Length: 281
Image (tube, rainbow, N blue to C red; front, top):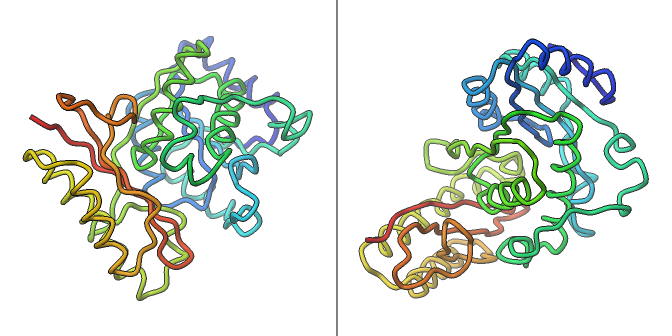
């Protein structure tokens, strides 16, 4: 596995692969990897001849009161995970190589998706996500990029940005990796205490119940409210539980069939997000 901290040397390797007509897949991460990330690498390997992964803790997607300084950095462990999974290039850029004129000089924003749901609770977060992904795309120039469906809002935002800015990159969503109780795998799950971890699977059960009820003809708002109150009773602090269009994340029309129920809630120090996509008759 090649390792690069700066893009210039990496681009030379990637240029040779392109000359050889090899298809390149890209998996961007913030490190502190778990089996969910490895499932993205495995998906990427099935889509391309070579796989590039990045590890970069992006400062611009953290709010002032969020955990940028404390975010776990486990680079050598991550490198071993990626090597074992068959990654061909690990790109670990410096802040200066991603933001050469500073972190506030140039931005990418997708307003229709960046200010709702998680974006309403975390102002500026998705502007930071879109900006760093666009910059990474420019450095790697992959044929395909793989993102987890757990971050459904992020996935849709990146798809829209990619189309709107004309990146010739296929965006592929990979199914959410889950623990045995349904909890979506996340780096922030390690913030949960033993007792909180035992409780955390309730968020997946709650949104699955909402999806089943709405798919059977139930009113979205009513069942989301029931789920939100149930989570509060179990010790969560919900940011939202909502049913939205799976295509736009706007409120669905009465005859819209392709839907997704999304939830975000705090449990102790951890902020958990999850979603379930479903079809309404």
